Image (tube, rainbow, N blue to C red; front, side, top):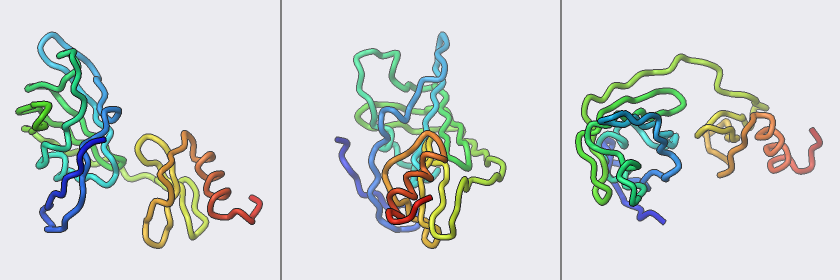
Length: 165
């Protein structure tokens, strides 16, 4: 289990941030000199967290040097509403990663709510679908489903057990 660290962000609010899970980082391509990586970022992490807290990238320690993120590699961090591209300035498995040349691209606005009944809604998150309480935007489960229909079925089953949909 990764060690949790309390980090003060620019808003002076303390929150606990865990290093990214190894599965969130995928090798996109490997060239002769450098590599390209894609990172699926958790929804609760901000661009500030990713760019100013190198300890979030203390991830996999492997014996194969070809599987490590190195200086000069390109990293694309993806959220549901934006993409951030950066070049690795410095990388060390025990320290983390710092970036230079950070570019943020906003994705186009589209309907992200797949289902809503006024109380709950099904939305995409972390490459899958889950359901949220509408009034305060709280994610109601830690599970993700492959389709919005499966998430809706789980919502009905778990939040409305007496109802038949």
